[in-house]
Image (cartoon, rainbow, N blue to C red; front, top):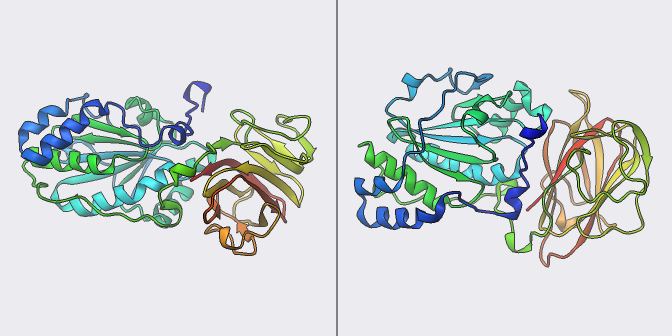
Length: 365
């Protein structure tokens, strides 16, 4: 990915639930909820025709869909990449809408536009769609051709397309779920497909899909590759694209991180060359996740997690036991910490008992 296409997912951890163009949306919601008629459609201006999927890398869960396949349907386009925590927290709603309105004329299409190299691997994306219960059609956009055609800049992003193929609304980032569902209902009614008097879905996300604790979230996403990392605190700084032995500093300030052991720091990732390497991070959030994987396909590596120097106990995430033990294999986001209240500044450490591990980014919730 070129620097010009260097997308910053971190934006949505600082401006959660932002809706671009939402200034008039409260009027849309109010008018539609009160009137339930096609006059409300005028409040959803046409933003242009939906671009083609002709430059798709591959289709999953479906044959390649052509304009004739989409004609007359209400289409919800969801831009995603499977290691993105913001998309994971949005997914339960998209999944629920696909199920609720699929028989009423709604077609959900997931556009998988990768951020990291491992997300271009069709086997990895196929695994993710199965593991994360993404049953609707998915188009792989490895060259970001569809991303650029939509002029999209964000993960996740939703584009709402009417039965005439026109984009009528968009939602960037998490949140605004009730309003998004009302747009779906409105477009279905406008197309004569029903959708009125439906109510809205009730969704309770769990595990990695649980909503963030926004009131306590004081640590933004951070990449560990040299291209975009912030707050690195090991003495001597990062050595780009070369092996080096790092040492943890005595203390870390909030949102600083450091390495210990033999690591190579590359543009998008860090790679552990010898066993017993460590990563430390000072954070303030309920949840801590690390996007990582085994360096070689089909292999795995053991790790131990500590919080303030102790085993995590009740603060362990879904990919760790209460003693702090876990194993990294497939490249994905691992939830390592989910701590109970009170939420305070904590120091996280992960020690890799085996070598052959690569890590990409920290995210929080």
